[in-house]
Image (cartoon, rainbow, N blue to C red):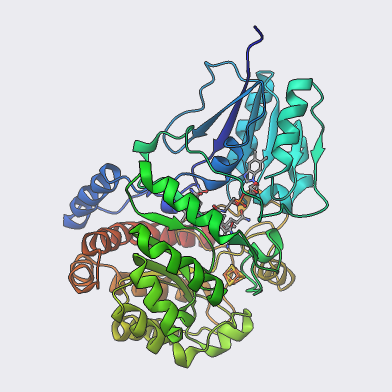
Amino acid sequence: MAMNKQVALVFLASEGGVDGAKSIYGDAEPSSLKRLLDKGIGSLIKRTQFAIPPLALMILASIEVPGVEQTICDLRFEEFPFDRKWDLVGISVQTGMVAKAFELADRLRKHGIPVVLGGPHVTMFPDSCRPHADSLVHGEADDLWADVLRDLTAGTLKPEYRADTVPDLSLHRPVSRASLKQSRYFTTNLVQTGRGCPYQCDFCNVHVLNGRVLRQRKIEHIVDEVRRFSRDDKRIFFFVDDSINGDPLFAQELFSKLIPLNISWFGQATTALGQQPELLDTFARSGCRALLVGIESIEPSSRSAHRKTQNRTEELAGNIRAIRQSGICLYGSFIYGLDGDTLATPAAILDFIQETRLDVPGINTLRPIPGTKVFDRLREEGRLLFDADDLTAFRYTFGQEMLYRPKNIPLPEFIESYSELTRKVFNIGNAIRRGIDAPGINAAVLFFNLFYTHLYRLSRNDLRKQLEILRSA
Ligand code: B12
Ligand code: SF4
C-alpha cells in the first residue's frame, strides 16, 4: 500500500514579545535585587503555560485530502523534526519573522524537501518570498490548501496558488484539533467568527490582508464549533476576531446563543462596547472574562493623524469604567510615539491608567510594519531607523527596539520618557494592586502584570543599548 504523503505545517516563534522574554541587545543590567526578582518572574513565566495554538494552521490541518497526513510543528516548543521524512513543509510567514522563515525554508530545500510559504507576509510581499519557496499561497488559504495537497499527491505542485475571490465563510468548515498537542497550550479553544475590518488605522494591515468588508460565518456553525470544542477542552475560549463587537447585532445574536453553553471566554473589542449596554450585558452573561481593547492614543491629534477614528477620546474613560463594572477585565493597549504625541503624553497616559484602573495596560511604541500606510509615510519622511528595503530588519520585539524617529520628540528624550513611563506603570507593587483590584480573574491579571514588569525591564535595557549603538555609529 502506498504511504501517505507527510506534510508539516510550521509556526515560528517570534524574536521576543509574547513568545519569549529575552534581551535582543544583550542583558547587562548589574546584579541586584531587581535581577533576582526578574529571575524568579522569568522562571514563573516558563512554568506557566500561556501559549495558544495557531488557528491558521489548525484550519489548514483540518482539510482532509486522501493520501495526505498533516502534522503541526510549533517551533515555540520544538526544533523542526529533520529526522522524519517530509514530502512537503508549509511555513506560516508573518512580517517580522521573515528572516527566520527564509532561513528554515532554505535549509529544508537544501535537504531536498519542497517548501510552500503562506500567511500575511506572502500575501503582502510575494516577490520577497519567491526565491525561498517551491510554491507560494497568496491570501486566505481555506480553499487553496486542498488544491496544494491534491497537486502534491499528483506530483503537480504549482509555483503559485492564488484565488480570485476570498473563501466563502458561510460554508461549514469544521476545525479539527487532532494534530495539536493540547497540553502544551493555555487553551486550544480558538474561534474566529469573521474576517475583514472596515476601519483603516494606518499602522495595521488587517484591512489589506482580509479586506475592508466584515465577512461573517454562520451563527449556527460557530455555536456548533463552540459546543464541540467545549466537550474535550474545558478551558477558556479565545475569539480571535480583531473586533468582536464590530457588528453589534451579529454579536448580540451569537453570544445570546452561547449563554446556555456555560463557557468562559476572552477576545478583542473596541471600547464602544461601554456604550452598547445590551451587548455588554450579553457578553458578561455569556462568560466574557477579559477583553483586549486598542486604546492606542488618548491624544486627539494622534488619533486623527493615524486614522484611529472608531471612538472618541472623551468617551474612552467612561466606556472603560462601564465595561469593568460589568465584571469584565480590560487589557488596554496604548501606543506612545504617535505623530501628535509630545513629552507631555506619558503623564497623560499614566493619569488615564490610574483614573480608569485598567487591569493590564500595554504600553507599546509604534511598530511600523512594512506594508502599512504608516511605514510608507515614515519612509517618505526619512524617519525609519533601518533600511526600508530590508524587510528582515523590521523584526517583532516587545518595545525593545525603536524602528523610527518620533515626529515631535528627539530619539534620546523619547527613549528616556518611554522608559520612565514603563517604570512607573509596571512594578511589583502595581502588579499586586491591579491583581487585587481586578473585577475578575485576579490571578491572571496579577500574572500578566508581573510578566510585563519583567518584559518592560528588558525593553528599557535594550532601548538604552540601541541608543548607545546609534550614538556611536
Ligand atoms: C490572534 C492573534 C495573535 C495571537 C495568537 C497568535 C497565534 N498563536 O496564532 C497572539 C496574541 C499570541 C498574537 C501574537 C502575535 N501577533 Co498576532 N494576531 C492575531 C490575529 C488577531 C488573528 C490571527 C488569526 O488567528 N487569524 C485567523 C487565521 C485563520 O487567519 P490568518 O492567520 O491570516 O491565516 C490565513 C492566511 O494568512 C493563510 N495562512 C496563514 N498561514 C499559512 C501557512 C501556510 C503554509 C499557508 C499555505 C497559508 C497560510 O491561510 C490562513 C487561512 O485562510 C491577527 C490579526 C488577523 N486578523 O489575522 C494578528 C496578527 C497576525 N498578529 C500580528 C503580530 C504583529 C503579532 C506579534 C508579532 C505581536 C508581538 N509584537 O509579539 C505576535 C507574533 C506571535 C507569533 N509567533 O506569530 C500581525 C502580523 C502582521 C504581519 N504583516 O505579519 C497581525 C496580522 C495583526 C496586525 N494588526 O497586523 N497574535
Ligand atoms: S487596528 Fe483594529 S480597527 Fe484598526 S484597522 Fe486594524 S483591525 Fe481594524
